[in-house]
Length: 601
Image (cartoon, rainbow, N blue to C red; front, side, top):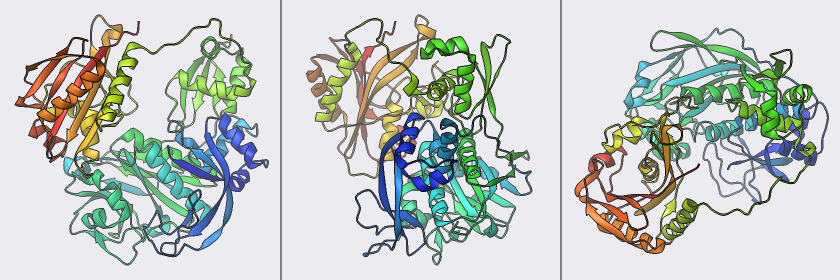
């Protein structure tokens, strides 16, 4: 996971009392942060764009700017040294990615303040309009949220902190900018209304961040700017690129790649215009809520933006409405194993910056109100974790378990580990993908009819409602992401899939499956069969092979297998139409095996 460095002195400056860096590190550990160490780091300034950057741990010099891409032979000028607390980011808590969010949580945990922080935005006076073209496949990135934040004059440290939290949110919520990406601009450099629209990749030009004197087209940025090279794959299928353009025609940004240089934030800035765009409305909204709430903790004042949708509808952004949930005292006692009463339960939740009120006179059920930045709170279980943290892990009295048992791996884990080691030996690299997908990704791209399948009624991301029934989608997505790497590319994934079964729990059953694929000029059925034979030899299995037909595979180059140990599966060369659907140009030989049905009874 990414690691961030938090300036201990600046963190203390946001608290009512002063603590040693070690004491702050201990408190952060207790609220769920993974503290790596407390260390002194040098700060340096990029001579090209003026950005303040930190030296990496153990690095004796910095010669490359991560923002503008400027590089030079001599080290950047040193500004000073700061004592920092290095944290591994916790993806489930994006509100703890930056200085403002950490200070807000610590004030509650350390007893300086309790209860729900309040966030209110000034009424909107400025507008962002959305072009209908962004909902089309040629430029698909349809969702946007935006806000204005009025700040005390930013210093270098705050500008650096703002850039850090942007990248952290890109990772933790935006899935490396795929689901959501952030643009931050000097308010005084933007003329409203702002249009969220598209530009031509070849003819429309602007000066990207870090290159004030160089006009570049979108296509040139993707091949010639460091950020463009890193994230070019996100626009690979676009014939027009998303862009924010103000009323003067100035290109503010080309999301999710790069901002324009003319509106960049610098020391002394007092007003920020912020947008978040993406392919998931939930990810877009959550990202903006976390960011503006953290900026308010640093002294900012939030002003709403009116979003004029292509449909003609208008809405105010951001939505800072708190969300309420119900917590039951008895369930909290039973699940956590703590001697809780109504008072200790409420005290623990208020310590975690939540509001809580009894629902009934007996004080057995409570309404808990969570702030808008807590996108991780979706169920009572999430709040019970906060109860445990607020109660204090050091206050939990250790006790022996009531019975002693000797653990042993489950049969599917034994077989899976044997298969994993065999594939490592064959030169394959393991990947992990999301268990949720869409009908188009999971069936349409594979030329398959959409069968009855398991669906999620309340997914975190609304588009991802399909619970996977095979592993091919994840492996093919992995090949797509790595298609520019040297060939051949050999990937595998081993995980559970879910199939409908009236006799199973909740009408479903799980299977442990293995999917592996080779992509390259020489990839074909014979190579896939060789790999399967080697794998089955290691597993002590003997296979029977038979021709079969499958819409995802080339006719005549596909076989099904059945082993004497119960392993079944399909082996073949993927159909060219499937390859094109995933944007691939090289042949792919793919294998999917059912290692074991699972019984969790």
